[in-house]
Length: 154
Image (cartoon, rainbow, N blue to C red; front, side, top):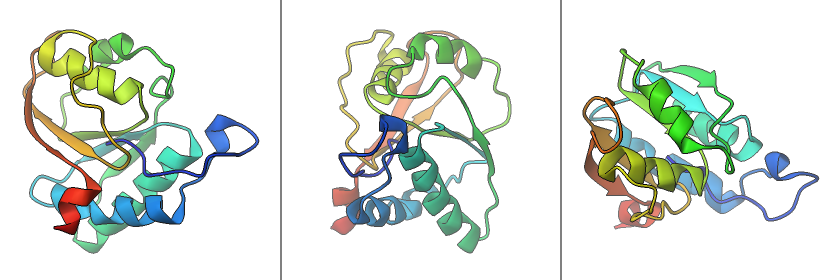
């Protein structure tokens, strides 16, 4: 999941909070997760990602699920998604959800599903891409679905 829409200015990029739109969009995405809720959520330390994850977790808890939430360094906008592919190979309990940023999350999606870093899906704010499979290297997962807040409005 990419974080929800954030305000454009703050003291640092890491401190930009969600806008009102971003808060609503994040909440609107919870129903997408109810069929296969995440057991664990890895969240960027940036404020907008933390706020997005908190909104999603609140919705999941209200639906009877209790995911474990971990703040993970290395999944911020400018981090290297190649490094995360190796970490994901060691994850055995799932489903796992990431709450991160672009360009990181779009590039990671391409690495996992297509084996290259040329992002085909741009991951709009608050969008979720659901992948299935085991991470045994680049291009080893399949995209099950990709949903955006505008999909939820219909």
